[in-house]
Length: 215
Image (tube, rainbow, N blue to C red; front, side, top):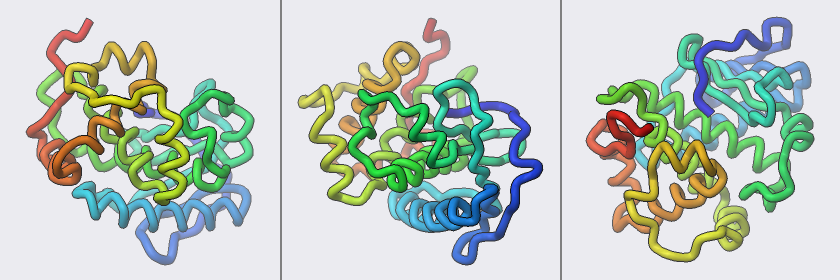
């Protein structure tokens, strides 16, 4: 999820991650270590597919998020807010696409999603907003950066088993059915002849899934 401004984590303990210029913020030191491990791993995986996460970056694990929200990127403070693993488990719907993941893997995948938003935030948008484009990229990379066995467990249970056309990736469908949009996003990207080259074109601002007046 992309957002504007939410104040969070002011009183939580923080530490600088050893392998990446990220400040992990959480009351539980084990959760701070999880943030650092996920941030390092996912930043490398995203960079391998032409998404370079901006640093320094602050990642805060919190329970103070909008209802049913697993995470968000605050584009004003340049901070990622992610639900703590326990809170993530408590808000998770049993029919969600990522239900086959362990809590640790799902937590890390949310960080990958929000790091993608942080990276795309620097790309100029020719429209009022590029919501469909940024969510396409974030959802697709959230799934793509999973370990292979975990990714297979998730994608083998998708609703769709067919080619996804570009017209199916649009802001209206995103707002109506975000879970199904996430499936279509990964399927569409995985069906490209060169997925990471396609990602590179998105990150260069050459490809968008948004229009001037979607509603």
